Image 1 (cartoon, rainbow, N blue to C red):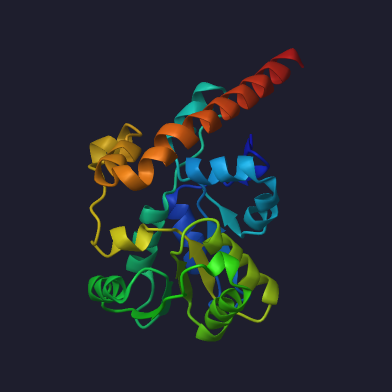
Image 2 (spheres, helix red, strand yellow; image 1 turned 30 degrees about the vertical axis):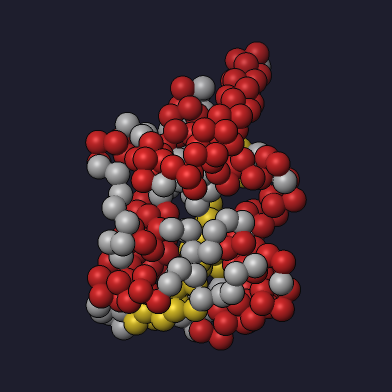
Length: 249
């Protein structure tokens, strides 16, 4: 059974399999990218369906929301593993061969340095695109070309959604880049130890969002308290309708 949400289909693979698939890719193969949509991504996609092709162009679409996973299970959509961008980034960096080149796009120089210190066997490079990337085609093109020229085995796109997904798609469309891009937002901060993640027990109870809200109430209050609930209600209505149709067949 597929798990569909607003035109996206999530891969039913767990963390270990996702990491295995990423590591198994030929580093010299054409650039491709992984997306990790959560409730915030789906809220944006619900408002702007034009973003759908950007996400659907990805090589792997992984569910990064335990709340959505619980809701889907309760409404008869089966069990879909949750693979958070934070977990995927940390585990992939930990298992990459020594000497592998990693490009961090976004965040700051101190964050890149912390990442390099944490994963000392990897070669961590950093590119900081300018602010206003969405409204500056020339700057966007420079960022795209920086990724294309990097030849990094792994590109961590940490410039926020949906610009990181759009940038990944643009690099993929160019057709001449190699490596794998992860559209993972703030995940490198967790991997580098710059931001503390929620306790394991909160993660297990699908309460990591509450932990993050407590840490960054100004930035995340609207996302979790206003934008998120309508998305969950829309998904609940959709999946409930799907279950009824299956029962009627």
